[in-house]
Length: 467
Image 1: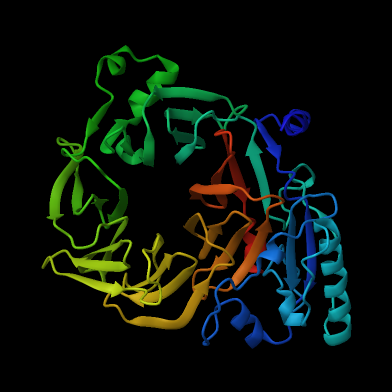
Image 2: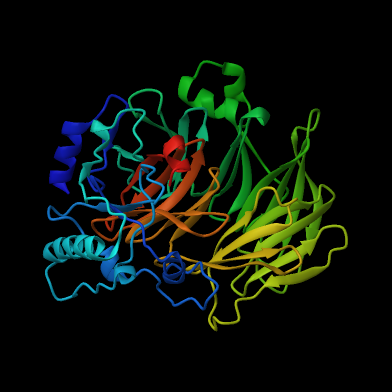
């Protein structure tokens, strides 16, 4: 770790970031000739899906120097892409031995894959190694760029939200601001309070949070937080800087949903769902709209959709599956229960698909994802299958979905579940999605010692179209 800190100090940029040495190379290969077999292996075909579609021995392969590698295949159209799906060697009938040392296994895997390609595929691209160190990347590079802020947080990062260009960071022990416009300096805003979830609503001058020991829904005024740094407005300093939403305690998750000119706040509690709506001046606060209590399944994730611009429906995930509440009637019904899993499930994400009139969703749980509509009908004969159990899943507004696992970061198409790209880790680590905007995706790592760092990935828009 000391060597890593010394290296970070040498490579530190003026904005307080350093390149991620874990991700220094790309190894392009050719596309599988049999796309049907590729679909079957990656869990997006019309056949039964084997568990663990991407074997762990692939995830463990690293380059000879112990660094993380990214694999890609070039599509048969000849389009040069930044990185695209990881090639499973089973497509080429190869089976790397698990008995070799890690570095030699990676070398043998690469050479064997090349040999098989040359023997069996007509369209072949020579394997090359490209340095992806962010310090050598130009702004218009086709390669996704990952950097990390040198600042190490002493307590675990639980959430974050962009405020302008800067990043508000919520940890186990407080709220901080990471100055992304300057040299990466960190300002402490609130101490000794746990921040579980947060969203910045700049137009309303508020920061919505689940925070504190009792997981209250507390709203902070951005003008008050700003004055905590600048101390240039005595009038603001005199005022209370926050207010609570109702008397809600034990909040598990919330979602801010904007429909036309109304902002709804839908909140998951221990065995209930509450909906609040923003009331403009003179009230300037969230006010109670609907309440649904005594739910059979405890909500863990929650969202709100508007069917065909008319009907409000709450979607929520539990340890049992996914459910809908019709806001008008109060009726509750199941839309997907994964009966093939006997134990409790972990819901990861509820993604309301674009251009479906708010009626179709991708529901992610465990290491899978299914496409259903708001009435519980399967809309696509596809099961999205992650290569490993993700610790975090998020929809990125490039019509892609990302999964953060201990061995890799996967990027997939939200429409089809196809694998678009993989970032392999050189060592297992826990990663947590924080937030995203435009082509920037922020996430955090947690070391065993408890310190966290903020990472961000810059996804090149042009290259993403070519994946």
